[in-house]
Picture 1: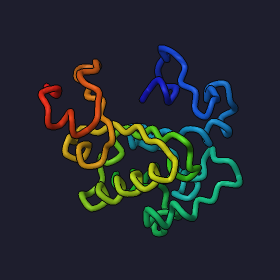
Picture 2 (picture 1 turned 45 degrees about the horizontal axis):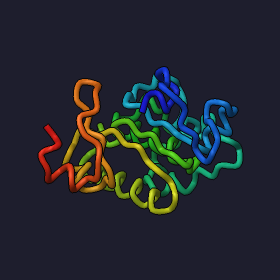
Picture 3 (picture 1 turned 60 degrees about the vertical axis):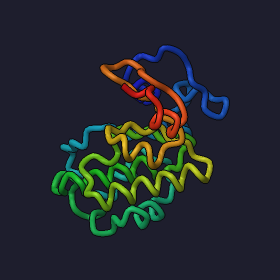
Amino acid sequence: IHPLAGNAPPAGRVPIDAADPWSLAPQQRRRLLSYLPATRDIKWPLVGADLIRLGLPPDVDTGKVVRELELEAFLDPRVDHLSTGERSRVLIARALAPEPKLLLLDEPIANLDPLWQLKLIDIVRQRTGRGQAALVAVHDLDIARRYADRLIVMNDGGIEAVGETEALHSGPAIP
């Protein structure tokens, strides 16, 4: 996820809709990919609505994702005053709002209660059914098995197995 998000040196190029995301201006790039980092630390004195809109093109309607993630109560408080789970949902909204072609989500269910873990995975799954792709890093193999089409199993920074979810889960490929 990190090289695709621009946080680590890439070993090559991955075009999205025939465009190199790193040759585009940031606002154009947000239409192609969106990144949710694993960290949820926010020290900025921004209210939730401002954090969701931060860096988005002016024509992006954030109302849909606010309703989808039930964030109405978190728009006016400062995000550094929210609980970690509430802040996570606001940051997730920021990643989902531009409806990019590719979602890069690093531990999106971390810090969420079990109900919101399942709700979020369902939301991401619905979006991938409408033409978005998602690369999601999770440590919970049961969640990955239940929701992913394909798995890349990593161990100590290296790829251990790649393949269809059921084949990997039922076979000897996962150490």
